[in-house]
Length: 166
Image 1 (cartoon, rainbow, N blue to C red):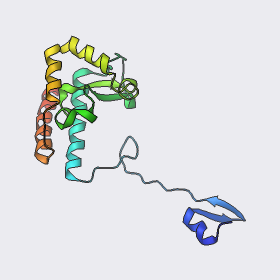
Image 2 (image 1 turned 135 degrees about the horizontal axis):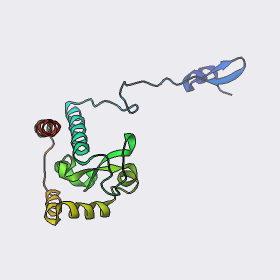
Image 3 (image 1 turned 60 degrees about the vertical axis):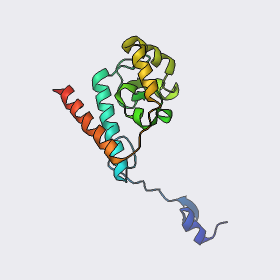
């Protein structure tokens, strides 16, 4: 049997002789799409803004069809922006590079880990082998993470986005 002081610590209280769990209060961040934490550092805010711009440009250019399996009408949480060379190994330069990004469904991007073989074949068919070779060579490019790098890309992508909408 737990002592009364222990009950207060584990979040249960005695009500009419029985133990009852106290409801857990969850914080609401005000963001759509769940309880995602907002970035705290200035660099993290720039990264988040840059990624949102990358997603908008990719979705504007390629529409709402999965690039690898051609599943139509991607919407909501099924509409991902996938990397040809995965973001875990591509480095900073290619992580936000528009040549490396295409719309993908949840199945291809998450379950099939970007469906690399189909992505490669489709990219070679659409853009040619030299295009794909350039992406692979840029994988070795070393870029330092700093605010100026993110801000330059943000400015460039904002001009691209404003040009595509007009």
